[in-house]
Image (cartoon, rainbow over all chains, first blue to last red; front, side):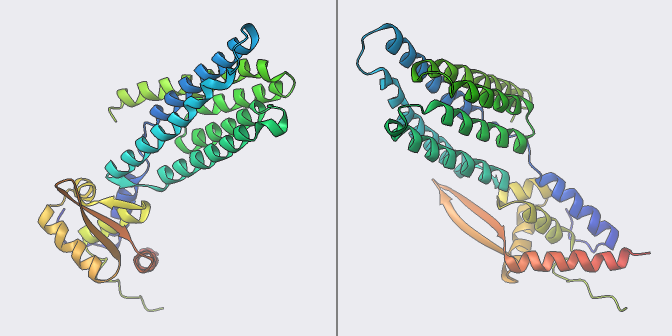
Length: 193
Length: 95
């Protein structure tokens, strides 16, 4: 690019062209959806099977994996933002959205006793908010569909006991995190991001 | 109505390109700006210095491992200047 004088029309064209270039490109956030999808899938199925069919005393033990998930997410998130050549507002919002939802979800889980361990309907509702807003920000249909599934499962979860709620949780992350996560990953590969 | 003079600092191809990129993002790396504008490192460096001296952008230089990393960010003053530049340019384009 030369450093030449511009006509007013050339100026406007240049502004438009550069703003277009800076506009959001496809972001691959599949790592987080797959990580959390598998952690929650494992923890909820483990919880259901041990609580329903065994006399194992600590069916909720699998949920301790969420602590590891939180640490891994923080490490990956900060590495991603350090390496990024450009920081845009969408990525910033995205990070804050999920961090805030994470805090809300952990608060519900750690205070579960006070609501008779009926935590899953609330977790499903919050997961639906995250996937819906992420889907809108990334203009990504599978996440929007996932959010509707989360909300429908939340409606059902209010009507069943805490052990059965675990099966709804597992279905929720299958459709809301894992399916969109794998589609996102394969799209990212196709677009060579 | 007399036309307002266009800000000479912005009315130049490369500096305007840099400002248009930075107005749409929170911050951007020197390498990213170089790629998007297609400018040479030397020329871009000079123009970034000019914008920074005027207070239109802030420049942060640090090292990541052994590699230097220069991050640019538009300032409040830069946003105001960019907005009034666009407003003034529209006057010239009115039929």
